[in-house]
Image (cartoon, rainbow, N blue to C red; front, side, top):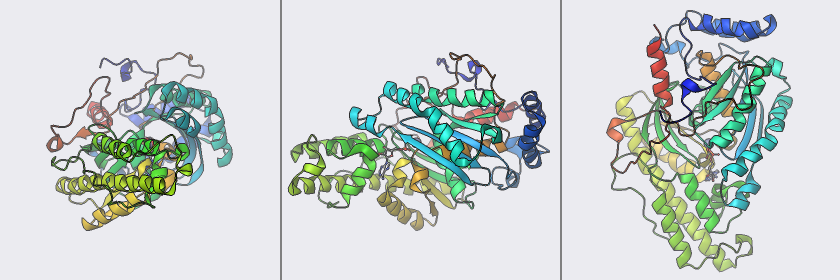
Length: 467
Ligand code: KG4
Ligand code: ZN
């Protein structure tokens, strides 16, 4: 890896799975840092859940992550700063959400028309202490009550990730807490297991956000196959640009504004072309649709500098028609690819019952209802977390931390006084799983520079290393 961020040189060695006998190793490490009270609180539930540890890959299914409620007492703080929201939450391993705090950078988004990394970093730095403190206060817990801290380490903007990781390590160092580095997109998928306790592996997930469009088959915790991804832009980006060019109020981000305006429009008024119809794969492309929207806006002489609130009724109608037509085609593209992905996934894992739809765009009611039809047609069930858990949040990070912690995948507490300039393990470009070989499309252009090995390959490699 050319990247400076390789795990060997990092201070978070997340997913260097604990060597066998891992449980004893982890207890020993923790004993160095924990007083008796804390140790027993932290370890006993875990011991109950994990004695007779066997390598992850060889565990019988019932003992793996599909088991719930073995360790009721875990209380985990989750911290998320990968993009434009500063979020923290405290969650119990029973699935009880004790608190959830999100500070959004909506004003900055409006001013800069998108996420400007340096501004976003400053905004995170300004509020991170307050957001974490509020999450602890609202949960009515102190740092002493926590079992671990989970934090997003990628993918995302490294300047932003750094703020959350620094905070997590400072807190974990000061209170001798283990730390779990979390994959942001995995967290979007796994939060569905907090919501729907019946959701067992294997399952499928469509993850739709501002930067990602992923179709995955989740075999098991940390073991994912990527059936499809975007070859250029993600659907959330297309929603955001459409909102900006239509002069909509971006304070709640572009997606909700387009969804709202689309309700007034005629979705068949403009015949945008559905992307990638000719590609018999599960990949996505939204750059072309963005261009089509831009051209339609130009041809109708819509002036984005006139806010929608001040537009004439005729102008408003034209904008609503574009919003509705865009949304119809953007979602048709999701439908096409989901339908094919379900067919592929059922060939690989015929027992799949659920398709999870998560990520910011999954909070859209039109998206949910259209995808529900496809999923039902294919004999599966849709699981869609509530909107507050679809958009970026700390709960999904805490929950994913809990899932990995239960498997013994965490790092021991960092040093109490880690230097400010310590080299951190941040993974701005971090694939979730391996690409499904049959799904590789000619249109796919994987940009490999500074790409971290996927979460799946890291976990598989660690399992193989265990004697
Ligand atoms: O998952 P998320 O909160 O952050 C990222 O990881 O990117 O997703 C944010 C994206 C934004 O592009 C936003 O416009 C979109 O999700 N979004 C929506 C809706 N709510 C948020 N898109 C369409 N309809 C919505 N209701
Ligand atoms: Zn996200």
